[in-house]
Each structure stands twice: as structure tokens, then as C-alpha cells.
Length: 238
Image (cartoon, rainbow, N blue to C red; front, side):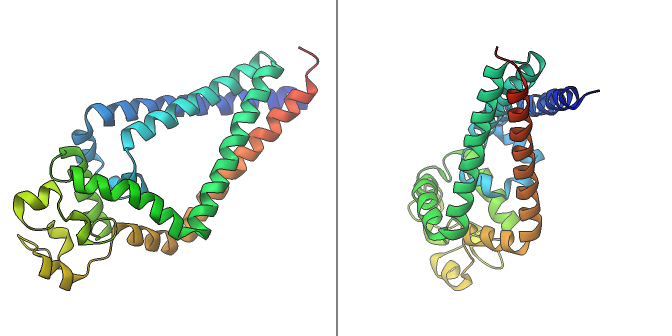
């Protein structure tokens, strides 16, 4: 088997896995969107992650569609030896790779900017939906329980939320140890850390694992781009 044939087969298998993985993410995203409550009951501990700061269902659907598109382009491009599909695959993957680097730089170097951007998205959602929207309330409860945190910044994020207006108190996770009720004075004395800071702390404590996963994904993306370019230049004029 020639080097070209081997890399062509490798490209097809690699992108077939990406396509199937994208399909799984798409199905999972649809499940979360349609029946988020049952998802959280099964995967409660997983909800204590950065993905709680976005709409998990729509995020998974978008990621699944992108991965399926990439897998289709790469697999068909290699199988049909189409220069057009291969260069499209390369271009999309390059954009994703550059975007990932940009996000990493913003999070690592401009943490305060990332905090402001997330704050403008998350805090208004808490004040509007927590206690009124069941899925969002359950998601935040799972996050606060898993990370041992309170709100985005602290207990004040829940001020004027539907939950606060109904119970005239804050979530029990904002008090340490948790009680049946959590008044403002109790929450202030407990000084439970916000989930954003707690998440950053957890990431720092597991920096080697996070860095290893990120490096592995980056290496796979670079490898796929190199193989796509190799196949592209080895092919004759379409």
C-alpha cells in the first residue's frame, strides 16, 4: 500500500469517527433540549462544568452539526479524491483551530474580559429564570452542589430572582453549612465563592489534565489538516 493510499484510508476512517461522534452529540443535544430534566437526573455530576454557562442543548446540537459536516467533507473528499471537498474541510478546520486558540488566549490571558462577557450573559439569566424555569433551576442547583459554589459571583446574583421573590431567601447552597433557609445575613457570613471563580480554581488544580486534553485535540486537528493538504496536493486537477 502506497503512502497516499494509506493516508487516504486513514482520512476516511478518522472522519467517519468524527461523523458518528457528531451524530451522537446531535442526538444528545436534541434529547437535552426536549427533555432536559431527565438528562440532568442521569448526568447530574456532569452538569457541574463550564457548559452550565451556556444553553447545553443548543450547544450540543451546534457542535454535532459542525462535526457531522466536517466528517462528511473529510470522508467524502478523501474517498472521491475531491480537491474541492478537501480544501473546504481544511479551511473549516483551520477556522475552528484559530478560534480555539483565540478563546484559549482570552480565557488564560484576559480572564477578566471572559468574566465580563459571561457575566453579561449569565447573571441576567439567573435573575430572570432561576426559580421560574425548572431546567435552568435544576442545572444551577446541580452546578452549585457539584462545585460547592453560589451563583456566578456570589449570593447577590439571586437578588430579585423568581426564587428570591417567592421564598424571600437565597438558595441553600449559598450558606455553609446549608440550612433549610438562607437569609442575606447568613449568606453574607458564609461567603461561599461564586461558580466562575470556583471553576477557574478547579481548572488550575487540574491544569495538566486540561492542558493534555487540549494539546491532544490540537494535535489531531493539525494532523488532519496536514493529511488533507497532502492529499490535496497529490491529487491531479479535478
